[in-house]
Amino acid sequence: TVGLMADWSIGEEHRCDECGADVDVPLPDRLIEDTHAGKVLLFVGSGASTEAHNVLGHTFYDEIRSELGDGDDEMPFPDLMSAFVSRFSRADLLTAFVRRLRYIDSHPFFHRRATRFHRAVGQIPFFSEIVTTNWDDYFETQTGAIPLVQGSDFDYWDLQQRKVLKVHGSVLNPGSVVATRDEYDRSLDALR
Image (cartoon, rainbow, N blue to C red; front, side):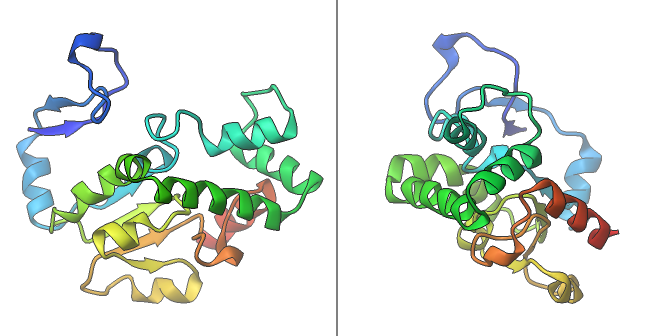
């Protein structure tokens, strides 16, 4: 069995600050065999790092919505980012994310929480291909993955080393970040 984050509630007496609602779940034999054979690709979204609610208690989305003074918590992420860029600038948006990332990284407690999943993945040699929408560099720093960020990088998908395909770009390459609705649309067209 492995620990997986679960969305269902468990009693507070069984919950800890570090692991939250982690529970052991049995994995199908075929999944274990395919993992050992290197046939499993990880797809990891934002809830695995800086945007996990147990890191700061609020997300980047929440920060941007607050900055805009927008009470609509149903607005899709790229539309909210577009509104922010329209009012301020794309540079201000990236600066806000970098500020959040540096704040998390400057506090060992927050950094441990934000990189917990990445450290666990880094200990499993069978995961050599990772796809993420995350802008942070935690797969690079915590698992040693080589980042594939832009079109010319994708030619190296066959590298024998662990690699991470960053479909929404990387904060270390600001021009690659996919945040606004227009950027999402262009990125989807390019990936097709």
